[in-house]
Length: 448
Image (cartoon, rainbow, N blue to C red):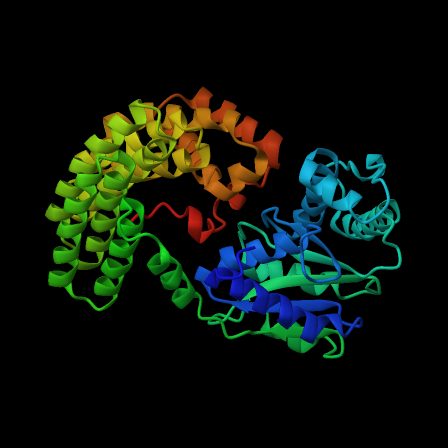
């Protein structure tokens, strides 16, 4: 790690905080980091570093990043994630071998069925950890399990899961590490409920934004990519200050500089970043003009094989559709969302395609009913490209409910029956009530 990098200094600070506050107390069973949303990547990098031989903390870390879908399924999902890491992840195997003994772990007892009940899964989870420690040759070492779900469908249910995990006898060789947001403090009730001897909250004072700014300022100012980073930072500052004139001045200069670079991905990024900030000022005519210009550049880059441009096409169409919807241009918005869905499918981003289809269908039901059947068919066909977790997290169940209801009352009833049977076979007869559960914020279909 570059010792002169400001981000590296923050990682070092996290390492020192852990060693000082946690390593000296083996009784701790639960450690909570208080973080800001923008710091999530920093902490993710920190825990992944510590799960490798290159980590500075003389302890064993296992990082589990499977999504939290429900309280009843999370323990089972953790087991499956852990087993898959041990069986398939080469970096994980190399890290485990570094502890001194060849890693040879029989995972067969932990390949469990979906029908395993919550309490059974909890018991098996502890058995897995004990078995894993023996196979790794770390039986005399305390094991830190870092829980870092990349999506949480229900934060209250996640808190209840943690409460249940610590409600019975907890292994002395195990410590869990979780993350909480500084402003929301979701897990305060849990921390107060548990014995203070065994829990610890860490809240280091990090100037993450300052470190990011230092990194940007340290680059070669003549490089187009560095110039773009600086412009985006300055534009975001103008947006935060509600200074539209300053934003337009910076945005115009940024586009001019990126045109000189002749790099499509930089110019495409500049257009969408500038347009995105203009949403705060509701300048929709200007937004749509910028997005159309940038979309032409982005699609050219995508056709030439630029993977970043390919990913940006989806964002362009969704931003354009959102601006059109907010300015009450509903038919163009439906078309933009549809094209966004098609771009997502082409890029293999099927969860994002679900979001775009949901946006298009919700508008089409009100303003272009003749387009609804085709949109529903294309959207429902995504069921074959999503796994069960992705179906739940993306909001596909609500889309499936709409599909069934539409065909039951306005289309072909047999299609409604077939779709209902398909969903029931996957999620049981209560799948419709599951469809009403909130979609995680990062998957909410709202691009404004």
